[in-house]
Image 1: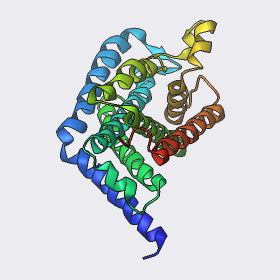
Image 2: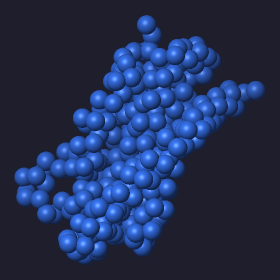
Image 3: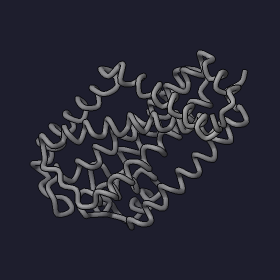
Length: 258
């Protein structure tokens, strides 16, 4: 067996393990996002949206749908890798991978694409839920696919980095609670950035989630608050930066060896 085939087998094994892990407990991993997003559509879409009317030239329900889909992708991609990688570290299963004749980037890719698989799966479920409330139309299919893939990779890497530094299971929830949730709620899911005063538009430009939701909404509705090429460039830059950091931490064994 040549090395490329060996590495691919290792990657596939980790990926299958990750997919099996979240599909085996689908009641905990796949059903809650569908219920949560249904409540968002009912409360913000039907009740609040009927009073707001249009935003960005489309109905409020259409406006928030891409943001809600993206929010579910972000949350689930992050939490899947953070919990899985930390569990492997806590149970010392990770030590077997660390000494295996497989490059660290293969191990990282296996976990990250496991998170991507859950993010895409939940995103599809939420999209199906959204279709019960609003007519979903996609104007730029390729852009939607690229955005959801880059976003899922980015936050899967973030979850892995969180797990590397975590010293207890409680540490896994700190970043989602105090960083991830504020960033997503202030990322333009429920409002257009054009409604903000100039100062707060500038502050919003520092939020990376804004660019993801901006491109994703443009892919669906053809409306954007910021430059689409700039937004894609920022997402790619964040992916490269987080991948480099994750590889550095794992290859040096920082937070993994006791």
